[in-house]
Image 1 (cartoon, rainbow, N blue to C red):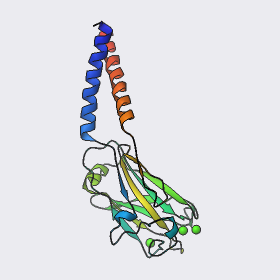
Image 2 (cartoon, helix red, strand yellow; image 1 turned 135 degrees about the vertical axis):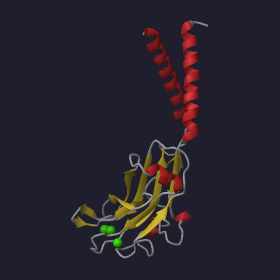
Image 3 (cartoon, protein in one colour; image 1 turned 90 degrees about the horizontal axis):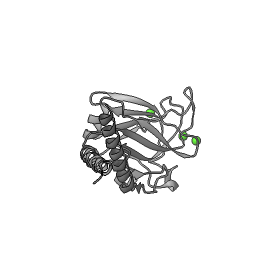
Image 4 (tube, rainbow, N blue to C red; image 1 turned 30 degrees about the vertical axis):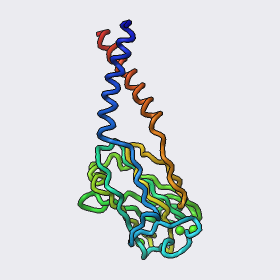
Length: 211
Ligand SMILES: [Ca+2]
Ligand SMILES: [Ca+2]
Ligand SMILES: [Ca+2]
């Protein structure tokens, strides 16, 4: 075996070992809350046709919340995508303000308002990765609640789904309710990751031999 191929083989072994340790602690998961798993106090709408119907299209006095399934492991990225219909938001002081709150382990923390526009479905994405409490709360089951029409101006909103996406997620979702999320193929990125790590290992070995 030539020196070059020995280096490649060694780098592949190092890469594979790094890959195994990485996947052991964190698998990409998308936890989706939607109509199919509503509890008695949750109001994700069944489909697009029901978006203006009670009890889904809700006003300032009909605030509600939900809890995501607990996801074990250590996660490098944590993202929350909430799909909402008819968020009549224009500016902070003029329009519909639907505030999203998260339980941080001791208190409720506001993440900000839902984005969107009149008569459309839209995702609002909140990146929780940098919060010190996010990891523990995802492990415990992330609790979310919404203050509908915080300015009490008579606005209503319907939610389609809430997707908790860790480490990039294993599903791709669209905001429209009744449309299932589709699985992400992980085989190709995994092999690309292995290849990349093998190249990294080769590079490190080259640097070492150059010193
Ligand atoms: Ca309210
Ligand atoms: Ca509207
Ligand atoms: Ca509205």
